[in-house]
Image 1 (cartoon, rainbow, N blue to C red):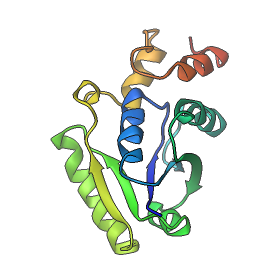
Image 2: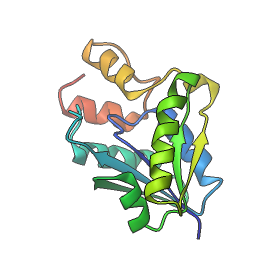
Image 3: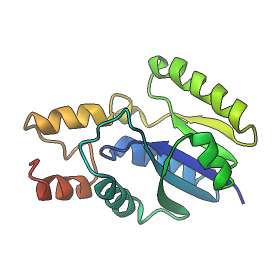
Length: 159
């Protein structure tokens, strides 16, 4: 069984993230979308909200499960017996950081290959930070995120 892990903060999940999930499901038997918990990051949405948003947004994808982890991605990938780590590349500017992470992950867990996927051209500019900035400035985010994000943002008084 070919298991891939796609990790991120997903604060919030965007249509770009979902585009990569969709692409990964065509390549792997199982795709684990895993929220990485980092003490360095201060997310806008709680872990519970992000898990819920990802579960709802990916419910129609075959072979996708949602999880979270603390610590090293390589250790998590080993624990779930992943054969691949999915990373998104939107632009050349992403490559240097992602290459460093891929090489570190290879050193820590050589059994999993890092697979770089490019999103559809219409999502190359999109990231969660941009969505949060628009949201917190009172802008309209519905063209950037799945409907569940709007639902949760309304419940949290962000819209």
